[in-house]
Image (tube, rainbow, N blue to C red):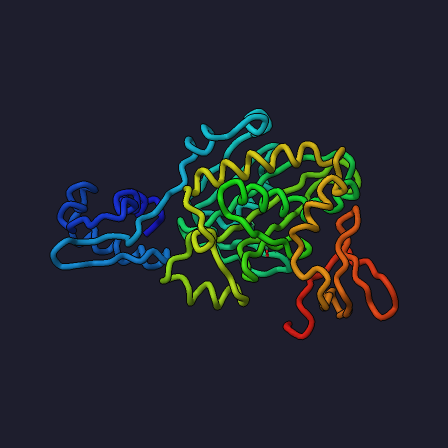
Length: 326
Ligand code: BTN
């Protein structure tokens, strides 16, 4: 059963109300047995359908589905002018992979579900249907990757500030580009580059944000995320995913356009004001090496500044954790 077969049923159940099996069959023009089969398949998408004998079926709490027209219509300028094509998919392997292979500058890709969502360092990004946000944006730069130093940190900051405007305060940034809230992972950024790394290059900025992971997803999320996690709804987010998506596109496209002139220096102080683990004893994990020290902050290129036993050191790659916690 494909997602295209299931979508009409999902659209009905998205209202969160009970629907008797007979009504569903009539509205979809299929037999009750076919309705039953489709309801079973929703479990494979991690959509939990509640059933009562008297009232029928519902998705408890409903679903706020993404709507391409609503996202485009709510885009503020200048993003509306900067946007190329908005590609929307119910299901895709990875929005980053898609834009890297076939996007143009200014294109944006959003999916309701990813079957091979990519995280940093080759990790898998948990991407269940209809609950979170999987968003990628492609932009072209003509001065090679060197001009993009610190971009992933700036992207994290722009997201944190957009979330603040949407009512989610206290989003922290964990170097280099993880989004945290109350010490738990809320989202992440994965930047991938194609083209000529020394000249005309295409950058794909992928943003994954946990939005509304219902209880039925908790076990799977725990196993895949492998660290404490949270989502926007648990942090007081009340508006819908379309608005969130439009707000992020609206903030990120202009940030990408202006990055070559502004560079990371423009964002540095605001980034540091949200930095997690600042002034704390940390471990810096980079391939084949672990360094210990106190996190001082970042420099104008986004490199991590750490006071080690041998003096101040700069790190431009790797991951950090509180000393003794990894
Ligand atoms: C991280 O590991 O923290 C970064 C995760 C980035 C996930 C997003 S979801 C949208 C885009 N498409 C992908 O395949 N990955 C990124």
